[in-house]
Image 1 (cartoon, one colour):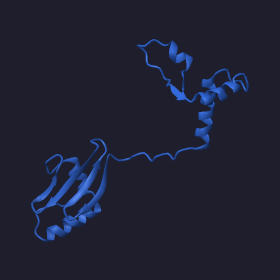
Image 2 (cartoon, helix red, strand yellow; image 1 turned 60 degrees about the vertical axis):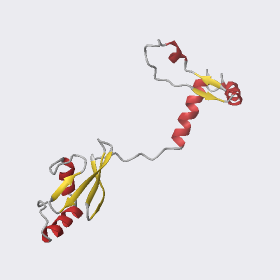
Image 3 (cartoon, rainbow, N blue to C red; image 1 turned 120 degrees about the vertical axis):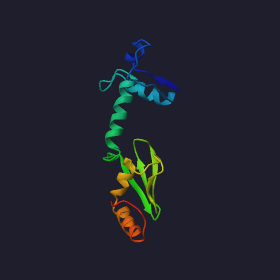
Image 4 (cartoon, rainbow, N blue to C red; image 1 turned 90 degrees about the vertical axis):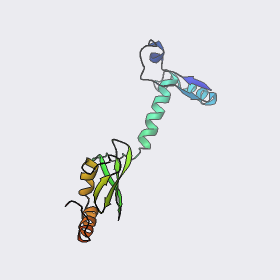
Length: 141
């Protein structure tokens, strides 16, 4: 195996971070690369590798992930409440609907952003409406 370094990365002091990475390639592949040095404008293995990688990426694009537009996302709801993904906390939060009210299991209160979000979910609104008819003391959504 041979490690390819970009020469500009080697010349930088150790105290400065470089914007380059090293890769290991089998010697048989680097021997093939050497045959192309001096052709098509290539002067180094690094130039050949960069060009090959660029062409590979252009021919094989990955789908662009859709950006998350909201911090909180409903995972599911059931008769106990709802599970919410909190992307900032990187946790799944349970918000419970109980006869005496609504409670966030994470914040341990009934008036946090997770509760507010839960109260905006149509299924939770319907659940609360149904439970209030049964005499539960849950705030109006």
